[in-house]
Picture 1 (cartoon, one colour):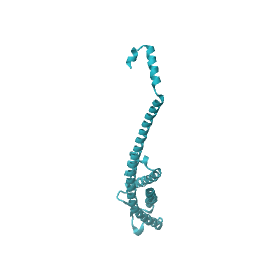
Picture 2 (picture 1 turned 135 degrees about the horizontal axis):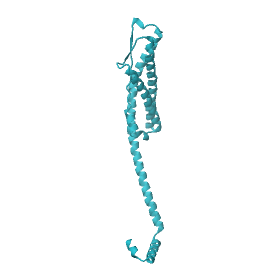
Picture 3 (picture 1 turned 120 degrees about the horizontal axis):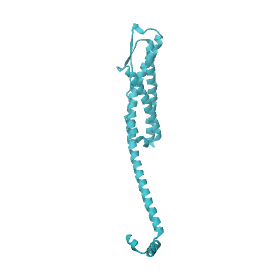
Picture 4 (picture 1 turned 60 degrees about the vertical axis):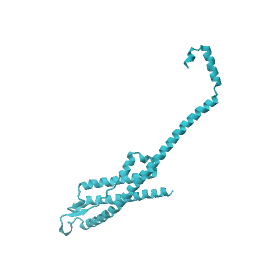
Amino acid sequence: MTWMLNVPRLVRKMIIKKLLKDIKWSNLVLEIFSVIFAILLALWVNEYQQEKENLAKAQKHLARIQEEVKQNLKILEHHNPLNKEKLNDLQNLTARLSGKKLPNGADRLTVGYSFAPLANTEWEIAKLNGTIAHIDAEQITLLSQIYLAQHLYQEHWIEFTKRSSSGKVTITNPEATDEYLGSLKFSVITSDRLIDYYNNFLTSIKGRDKK
């Protein structure tokens, strides 16, 4: 267009007027809208494909979380009855002692406990890589309940086992049973709640798969 700079002003005006007159505005507007529509469509398709990929990855990760939950349920169903039995025995013992000395003239009583090591690896990975943003909200709620309860359960036992790394507690007087009783009660109550949470989550997965 540099050649127009050398054209007299009046002539330039005439040329521009002629060019503007020859333009088919309806076609131009249609072309502009076509380009805009094509760009928006391309963006939508790209976003749709990305969301589809994210959902596929989320479902694969959810399957791994499901396996983690199943394993934790299996472990807990093994350990919880053992702690319930120990709790029952200790409660009976405490009731019999009622401030008296330990039975059979013993100066100490050794009682074991059963700690269930529960995994949370897949849940933590899902939080770190953002997978949970693409998992159903109802399932996220159930999983949040599960892993919060697991955290409380494990934190409690970590603190307790620091004082008894051997897996046994030695009680030297009836009053010393209080702390151990409290730990066992907390373990049993939390374990029962966790088992319910596990089953609720697994049931929700089955219900979703049937749809």
